View 1 (cartoon, rainbow, N blue to C red):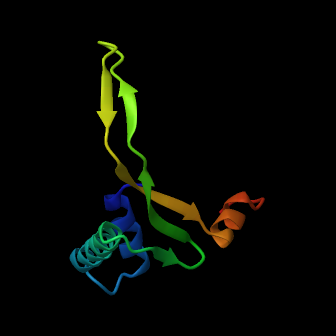
View 2: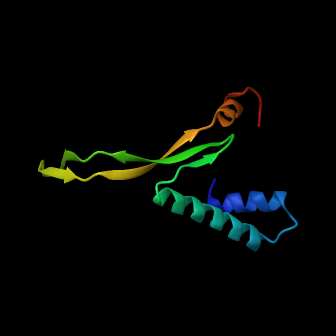
View 3: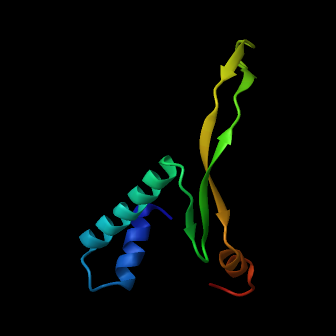
Length: 96
């Protein structure tokens, strides 16, 4: 699902609001989540899952084309851990 499809589905369920307002609200939510992760904060959505930032240690890598050794600096990556209720819903038998 793309962000555009998400906006469309939310608008279908909440027809009282114009699509423009629904789009703005979703963009504000995603922006707030991105800013929180950038600050190193944990995002917990009960029943859905948790977003956190994990650190990747610096390593010595190798350029496959030239076989030169390359220093890869420490990196931060976003990590999502699925919540129990979402996992159970996905794994339950029957259609959604």
